[in-house]
Image: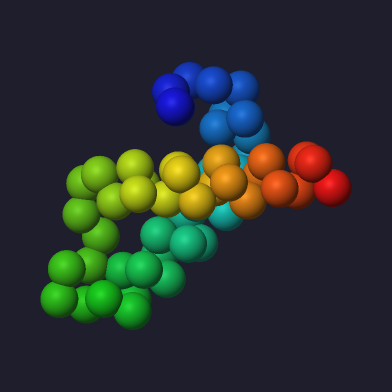
Length: 55
């Protein structure tokens, strides 16, 4: 998924990702935030978004 897709340009989605990644960094102080961890978040986001849209 490209970060240039319209859905990822929405402020609410960017804030959602920021909150989730911040919580990850706080809960995992040994690793904190590392480059690419947002790529692990994308599949979960896509699955939950698809479930939301289907309902």
